[in-house]
Length: 444
Image (tube, rainbow, N blue to C red; front, side):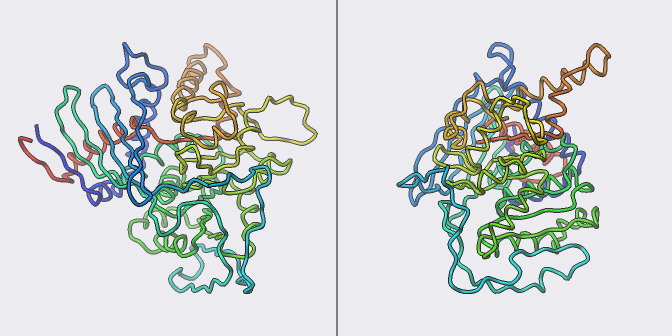
């Protein structure tokens, strides 16, 4: 049996050829795999959670962590092995209830324009210059000198143990994470404005897939990042790279903006972007919340329904979203509001209940229990059954569930599971073979 080898360049080339229909099919296959993971039994479904070992984290040199992620589907077995920078564990855990919204600033004057916006009608990004004089805020994220991009490989074997593919895991990991993250996003009724924390590969693929799936409806993409230079580079890529040309041409109303903690008025702008966002993607390995809870837990913050996807943190000491936001999301709703609030589901959506209870810092620090979590695969099953009832005229379906998923406050937390890699990896290998991408090793 030939072995297919896909380098990072091969995978990137393949991913950039994908059409909207390709993305929709890949996302459908991933959703089905997650459905099997959550609802299948060990006797009937190879891909059920009972057949998926928990990943192993091994500390490596130079503040790195290596993750071993075995998994299986009905057609493949495999393991992904990746190494990435470890976010430092704080020696003293800050009080989350006293999270300051005042970031340290230098004595130098801040730039007059604390954010940078650009639209198709504006001058090109390449002509933009900026002098940053205020000091960046201090936080506990991985420093910019350390890459948080996972480096490693995915090995795929047939159900009988024959190796048939070897893939570089760097770009693929970012893609599969964004593919899962946008499953619920693609069902939202309003995606006019999205805010993305981070400017790395995860952030880029979340933006790209959001635009591919709902691009004509998105008018604002706000990038929030500690480093203005990295955010500017990502925005420059969108406006100048041929790889983004089709997405640029598809929406003349689309505008990007950058908000960086290197600016003096960061907190005011951050609050504005959080409040106006219809979807928020958190793509950083931060160990402290990226914005104060009150931006969303206050009366004003609760008026609007938002989809929040937190995928950057993956260890118990990491925390992208304030635990108070999660606590409010699962608190009983007594319906005695003096002000209008967006619908909430009373649960946090996760990729894996077991993995998130063990590894998701936000879940652990908020004291969220298993009863307050629902796996996305289980949620999709309920949604599918409800829609089928409506189509057949045998019932009204779960109207409350649909209303919440489409327009309420929905939080999705993912730490990543190996099943995602196997499922997406299988599909990418099949596409690569169809399109003549990669290297074949005959008689391996």
